[in-house]
Length: 418
Image (cartoon, rainbow, N blue to C red; front, side):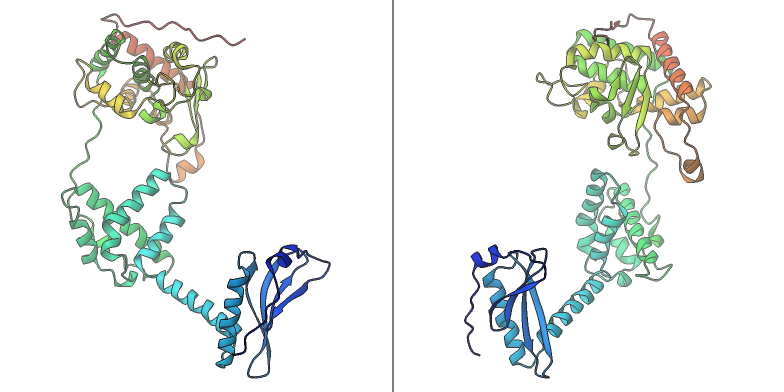
């Protein structure tokens, strides 16, 4: 094959600008650069096939495809032509083959489950996405990742579950996760309806009843409040004590409280707006603060108001109080059940409020629970006054329950709005 005397240079290509009409810059041997009106520079090879028909194949745009790479592609195309192969037809066939390979891969469990992660969990929290991917990487893909969806059998799913038999909850999560992926495959007609190998394995490994978070009765709640108060002069950091009180007084989740920022609060209006990205349900949640909660936050402002975080044990106010710190704080409270955790304050408040006659709808809104089904689609009520009244009643009740011993009184120290 005769060598080609190429003529284009990087400087010449960099200087090429778009004109009113597209034009060509010849390089040699049929290789040229087409410059569009917008200035896009595309490598092209014009040739005459063995049939006498003129053809053209593109190699990509400059500078993404440099001069050396374009000339190597040009040489390969000339070799194809010499062998009686049309370069453009060969490139088209290669694209179609890649599509076929992708379609085949899509029917393999690993490739399809990757697709499921992207399409079905796109709106889930990053933490949840990482958790599901981790389960697939650790337990599922090593076993059936390279299998075609249609070849996965109930026995394969059972084998995956058996790897986590010592952790029954995880075994069931693996089955449920696999079932969700196959349900999606059925919807997309990758497998036949009813051919979900994970569905038949439900109950193959018995999961013990879940243990609900321990909650306190009214007497225990009073003892808890007094135990927290005794920590004021103890070893606990004031931010840790304040955070424990706010978890109790707002019924919010531990992380929602610990990662609270001052910009979320309007203490003059006694309102706390938690943004959607910080809530479990991914919906904004408004908390109507009781007088007692405002007093706690007023005192806390004097400690951390110059920083971003409301609750921080850092001397530089650089990071929020850690969940581990809060968990350890609960474990050392004297007179409080050893199995009681911060999350148990939500169940405690919800149970007591229901016992005192507050409606289920009100309590569910206080807990930031989301209704499902038709009710969830149509119920957009806020029940503001009832929620505000409920949290104030609950704060007053806590004071009464704790009144058998002196509880530290927090005086407002936050600068008042002008």
